[in-house]
Length: 86
Image (cartoon, rainbow, N blue to C red; front, side):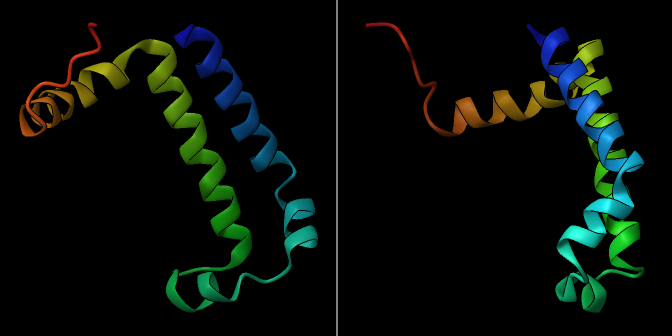
């Protein structure tokens, strides 16, 4: 299932990068991004697409589980090891 989700996220990320100008024309200037982000709204939209592509690759390759494994262990210890058993 990770392969399917990884591919879907990669495809969406590629579409965001390719059609970034059309997305910008649809959304217009993102004033918060223009004020807080060192760059333009167009660059931010493309950056979101690139982050999605990299995240999809991590999910596809299974590396996301390796990176989030320590966090998952920390959260399970924090909440007392939540159990799904009945």
